[in-house]
Length: 276
Image 1 (cartoon, rainbow, N blue to C red):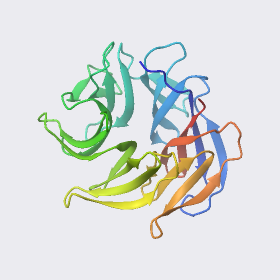
Image 2 (tube, rainbow, N blue to C red):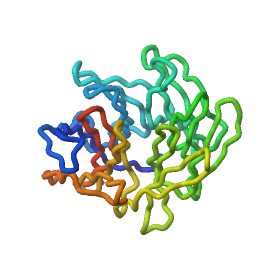
Image 3 (tube, rainbow, N blue to C red):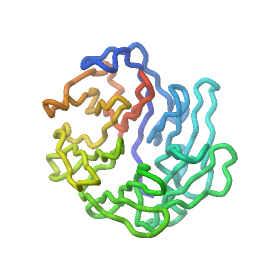
Image 4 (cartoon, one colour):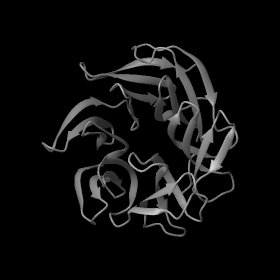
């Protein structure tokens, strides 16, 4: 497995998240049990309960962990000989967590599987013959939007019932979202200029929403259709009318080096701090 970066997970409570200038009253390091290691890809189940991808210090694989802050508990959900990434809840199947699985000693295969978070029975194969899946989002019944790892990194529709995939974008960033039938993604047209786009699968046309801050490929789409990103120690909010990013909050903590992988639940934002 390639060397993974040293990362931390934080949670911050924003008092006025609907405004264009934020203030906060709480920030909490959530990965203090695994310092100097890989803690990433948060998927909130509630403000105090979340999934994350973790590689323990000294380990050569990643697993999916469930964190419950109310119960002060941490549980390994995947606990296999393979590596798992990108946890999410399946929107239609109760208690099923979807993950990208990389088989042991295999650098070619990456498939989408489902793991029951309660009994952890044998994983369910969802997408296993569609290429090297890196990230994914549920689109509709048995249909997924997938980031396919390739020289030019593709976005494609993949279906559980067949091996056909329909590619609709290339040279894309790792962060994308699906909402109301639209697909939001970062198009890495040039190394120096990345654009946030919205794609309509019906018309097969993409609309440019804004240029991303330099070097930023992650964004978070809220339930109220706000789009948030981070760059360095600063959070930015997209002004859609003017197609530009507005600085909302700079964190006054020198240990925060680079905000990325933002996720949210209500007034709480989870983010990953990249140390090295």
